[in-house]
Image (cartoon, rainbow, N blue to C red):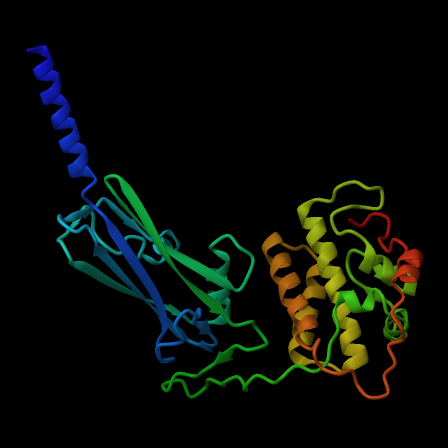
Length: 327
C-alpha cells in the first residue's frame, strides 16, 4: 500500500515537472533609425543625424511544439530609465505557434544624448547593447541589438526642424587631414623636436619644454608614478589625456590645424588645467585619441622629414616630465 502511494506521488511530481518545462520562447530584437531605411542586415545601425528617433522592435515567440508558454519576466534594463523597461505585461501566455510584438520609440536630440546612452551599458565606447531578457518556469533566453553613435565633431550632423528659422545646420563632415599617434612620435625624435620648436606645453599634469620630457610623457606608464607607486584611476586618466593632448598639439603644429580636433584639444587642455570628473576624462581620452588616429593613412605633407625611427635611443633619453606637487 505504501509502495503504491509512493509510486503515485512520484507520478504526480514527474507530471508536474513535465508541465513546468512545457514552455519555451525565442526572442528577436531589432533597432531602426527612423528615416534611414531598413539598414543592412547584421550591421549595427549608426546614428549620425540629430534629432534622431530610434525604433525598437521586439518579437517574443512560443516555440514549444505542443503547449502554450508562459513568460514570467520580460525586461529591457537599459531602457527602464526611458519608461520601457518592461515591453510586455507578465505573466503572459502565448499559444502554440503564436508570437507577441512590441515597439518603442526613443528620441535623441543631440550627439551628447546618444553618447550618454552608449555609456549607460557600462562600456567606454560609442556603441550600446540593449538586451531583452525573457524568463519562464524552467528557462531563460536573451536577445540584444547594438546601436553605434557618431563621434562628436567628426561625423555628427545636426539638422534643423522646419518650424525653427533660427536654427543653423552643421556642415557636412570633412575628411580628416594627415595625423600621427603616440606610437609614431615616441620613436621619431626629429618629428617631435620640430613640434617642440613651436614652444613648451602646459599639459596640466606636466610642463613639457624639452625633447627628453616629451619622450618621458610618451614612454612612461600612465598607471605608475616616478617612484613605481600605483596612481589612482583618475590620475592615470589625466596622464593618458595629457599624452593625447601632446600628440594632438604636434599634429596641429606639424600637419595643419583641424577645427574638429582643435575643439577637442581645447576642451582637453581646459580639463587638464582644472578639476575634472572621471567620466569626462575617459570621454576626452577616447575622443582625442580617435582624432589623432583619424589621419594615419594619409601621407605627410610634402617636404616634411620625420627622420628615422630610433626607439632604443628615444626610450633611453626619456625623462620624467612630471613636476613636483603634480599627480
